[in-house]
Length: 252
Ligand code: PGA
Image (cartoon, rainbow, N blue to C red; front, side, top):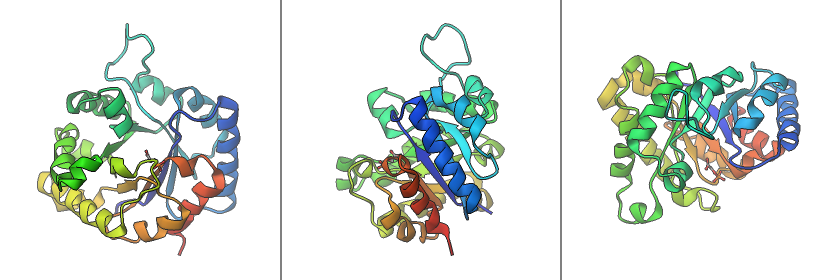
């Protein structure tokens, strides 16, 4: 059975001290009241080791927001998948639209990153999604299909460790959210692509998260869709009470 997951993407926010305070607060909330879904926080690299040492891995997973597309060596400023794993992190966000747009990460670069993440036992949270002009031109299906090429070269066994996140770029940080119908429609399409490639069972077991201005007030109706298995949360992951409000969308 596929998992419901709420993952936070802190982006380039929070000093180390602020990050520790937020992680502790969230951890305490989740220990006191066990969540009905998997919960993950993805933090800047420099927070990982400290956060790993203070959270309870049975209620809160930890991930990075990126990793290098090279194994090791003379790549000044880069952080490898092996280094991320050595902090105790279990996940890594790859292919976020901000990485694609501002750091020119291509399908090929992302394919390397995904492979290195998996080789180091990190679960990729692989992001796909169209920009506004592509949605306006009704090209969202072909855009996400092309982006999936980075993960569709994997074996079925490796692909089954990948979490997908559909994040329409026009909804990220804009306050504009995909409607539950728009989310369901494209999530079902993404799942059908996975089924065509890897078969119905793998597709059925793939978690597909929605991301883009998800907040406590809209999470429940988004996650209620049969093909929406949780969320990747930016802004609302920076305050423990907001993030908890989204996690609580899975409360029965
Ligand atoms: P947002 O970001 O929730 O602030 O829109 C989501 C993301 O970029 O992962």
